[in-house]
Each structure stands twice: as C-alpha cells, then as structure tokens.
Image (cartoon, rainbow, N blue to C red; front, side):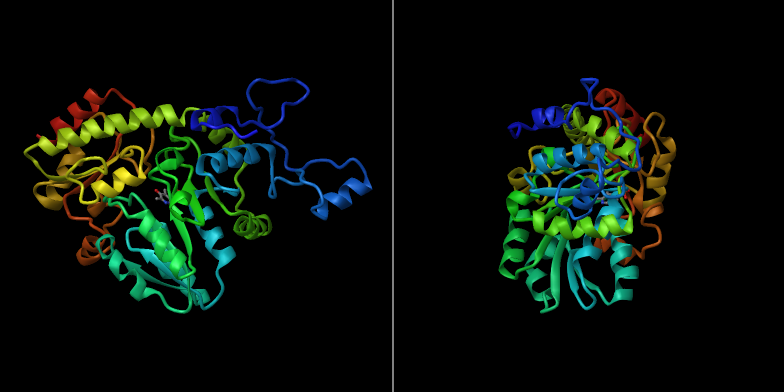
Length: 388
Ligand SMILES: *Cc1c(COP(=O)(O)O)cnc(C)c1O
C-alpha cells in the first residue's frame, strides 16, 4: 500500500523488519549478501528475482531511501548516488551518445556547468544555453541532435525561477527528455514530474540531509530510463554508501517540518532585507517583487530557504559585509540547520568574467543566504549588524 500523504510517506516507508522487530530501520553495513544455493545464485544473477547481491548494485538502506524519494516525487523508480554530481554525471552519461546535444539553462550548479563545458565535449556531447529571461529562445536552440532539456529551479545563487510547465510543453513538442535538478526546492515544495519532467535529480547533501553531515544524490523518473541509469551506476560504481543512505532516510522523516520552518524564516529574512536601506534588491520566490512570483506561486508550495540580495557598494561592500558576520557561518554548503552566508562574486564565481557573471544574474554585490533553523530574530540581528 502506498502512503498517501508526504509526511506519512517520509516516516512509514520502511524496509522489512528483521527478526529483531526493530522500530526504526537498522543500518546494513554489508558489502555483499549470501545465496541459499546454486539455483538462488543463478536466478539472482539472471535478474529473475529482486534481491540484494552486492552493495554497489543495491543495499536495503539505499532501497529505502530511494523508495521514499520515488513516493515523494511521484516517480516510478529511482537510483541513489554518492553525491548530487555523481547523480547528474551518471544520469546524462547513461542516456547520451556521442554527437548528442543538450539545451540547458545558463544558471546551473557550477560543477554541472563544468561537466557540460569541459568534459562532455571530449565525447562530442555539446550544450547550448538559455538565460532565465530567454525562455522564448529555447526552441531556436533545438537541433536534430538535441536529446535533453536541462534546468534547475529555483537557480543557484540568484534564486531565479523557471516555468516548469512551459519547459514540459517544449520538451514534449520536440520529443526531448526534460531533466530537472530539483535540489533547491526538494520534493516537499515542488514536483517537476507533474509538469512533464522525465527525470528529477537531487543533491541529497543539501536540504534532504539538512544537517550538514553526509553527501548523497538521487535520480528518479520512469522505470525505463531509470533501468538504463541503474545499469550504468551498477557497472561504474558511483553508488551511495549504506551509511549515508541510512542517515538520509532518517533525515527525510523530518523534511516537511524542517522545510516549513526554513521557508517561514527565509520569508521573514527576505522581508527584513527588502526594507533595509543598505540593500538594493532582494530575490525570494515568494516575495511579490520577485520577477517570476506568479510562476513560483503556481509551481511551488513555499519559497524555499535561499534568499539572495544585492548590497549597495559592489564587491568591496560585499566582502566587508561577510567579514562583519558574527553568528551565521561562512561555508560552501547550503540547506543546513545553520544559516550560511556567501558572496559569490568574490568566491564561488570569482573565476568568471564580469559579463559571464552578469549572464547568470550574479552582480558584484550579490549575497546568498541559506536561512537555517536558528531563531529567525537572531539571524536577522546578525545580518542587520553586518549591514550597518
Ligand atoms: C550542491 C548542488 C549540486 C551538487 O551536489 P553534491 O551533492 O555537492 O555533489 C547539484 N545541484 C545543485 C543545485 C546543488 O546545489
């Protein structure tokens, strides 16, 4: 029986109990599993039965984690990976051939961009990009070799929102695979499959773990596509470890309540920043001033935990602001219980030219805040004293 509601799915989706009748799923640290006899062994390798053979292929803990995400995203099947990047790399490598072409949003995660520009061209897989405000240009980028339409929404770090329904329509019309990196929204806030996505990818490292402990990734979608991706993973080895899967599956039990508070805090932080005299503008999907507010309202349950804003005074003021932060963390992660503040122009995106930065909405004074679960007044006080 499938559990109907998100919170129940997150808690009650559980692998079969062992002889000890444990309440909470145990950790299965075992690299391999035993066979009853020669016939069991033959049938297992012939894929005539579903069972665990070797933890590079599958493991009870990874199965539980994947089943939860499938239920949450409304997907048929899924495959877990050691990190979000392992998920993105393996998914595309499994499905694309030499000569294929990708049409991608320009604002994608940094390593995804590197994969598309530095590594895939080695195998003659090329990519064309569209900006957030250029969705009307997507169709002109499609060629007979185009196989995949790839995007994230909301985007990192500028928190732009892309119209998933529109992307779904374009993909369907041109017979492309629509692949959405749903990391910033999580399955609690947004389900891209509803809008026509064939595959949804997550970095589980961020809000899914939510406590800054482990790395993980997952791809979910149709059984047919996932089978290809699973075989690639099973043979190349970027599998999620049992320990990380166990941690992540536990984390999912509290995803809904954590996200409710993350979003409530982030909206308050965004509203505070919008009123501040040292701030030029604020980007948060559920602020009325967000350019894609209507789209965000249509496709997301709440605005997420990432707030971007532009501090007056450019790079220099951005750096001074970061130096004045006292309580919040300066870190490369996001989606943690701890609030994290970053200044992309002087750090993660400092190697890009100013034009390239502006192409992905990163102005010199842009600051990204991953709002955590501390008391929101303490977060606001810290941002306020640093701004002043
Ligand atoms: C962090 C992140 C990734 C990569 O995930 P890792 O688990 O760090 O490999 C991919 N996409 C987005 C949007 C991310 O924020």
